[in-house]
Image (cartoon, rainbow over the protein chains, first blue to last red):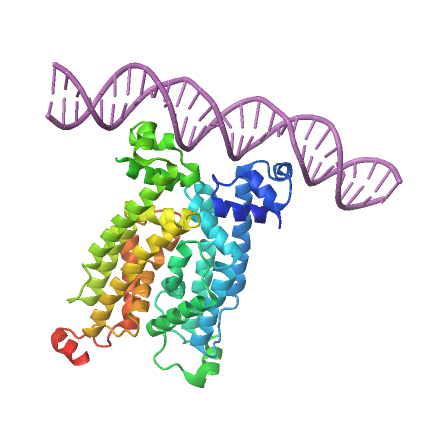
Length: 210
Length: 210
DNA sequence: ACAAATTTAGACAGGCTTGTCTAATTCGTC
DNA sequence: GACGAATTAGACAAGCCTGTCTAAATTTGT
């Protein structure tokens, strides 16, 4: 495993102040000097890690957003699958867990660094998700007033039952993820779904809206 | 400010490893020796803080749960007010912020301690909130299948727009809290509200629908 | 006012960590 | 195989932190 990846793991486990370079070197299987050669000092290494994680997480989120069901066959099932993918690929995976933890633990100490994350991350991903819901509503699949609010509520509902686990830094089981997404999406559709789920009119509806 | 309160503040700001006893002593206005006299060592002090915060937060949460609108005059307004109270008294206040931060940053290092928190905290508060929603549904104000799920989703929706701020350890403005609660409760009621909001027929309606 | 208990400042040893330095070793490439 | 670049182990100084100790000062109860 690379130095940066190992360092991310150690910083997350031990916190910035609690981690030490020898520990990272040992786990990465390199000498301490090599770390100093590559990254200068502990703080520069930390910044490199956050930038790296931000970039990779963003890429994962956008990749997953691109799988959003624009022409759903089964709206409920497709949205559940999307929510599960989002959890899997962006929230529960290594990078997602690490970035979240670093933001939570060190956010206060590096305001500029995490302001940068906020702009590059949530600042760009939320509008992208909201745009997908807006399109889905426009195509007649959903009844949404404010797509930004709906997007945030969708994610909040999908993760509603995983909060305590996330808080403690744990990873929910596959079943828990699916269960939370299922319950969340059902509630979401009770709130925003069309009354009659337009059966086979989907093709016309989709074309008309595209 | 007491030693324990000051220590909580410093541990949150600096993390366990990053905090030092001299800092706490200086901010608390006592000598280092006094801290050692009272609490033994750094780790015991930390445990005392978590226990203290858990207890106080739990008390606050139960006190707020007791203000749940069992006989709402205006269901939407009453639930919004409840959600805002919950945020104010339990999540955004000093104790709530500190406990959340300590759980997030040190949860991995003290599994037993935070397992204790999980039992005493979420393990008891979630059922209490769920029971209130169950009663409200039973009285005919809501249409809920699973009160446990509904309770978690209610809180998730009420806080949906505050997540990013919480992540970075910030405190949302009053407006943001109200806005998030309002949007969340409206969506919640779109999902779980009775079709016709039973106006003044509340007594009859409740009986008829129950 | 006095005695007991608590608190204080400061010194102190021991341990750990950062970041640098050096000399030897290994690696990649021709 | 040979040469230059990168990596390594280990020593090292400087600094910081924990936890203890002591003797003086302060507070508390009576």
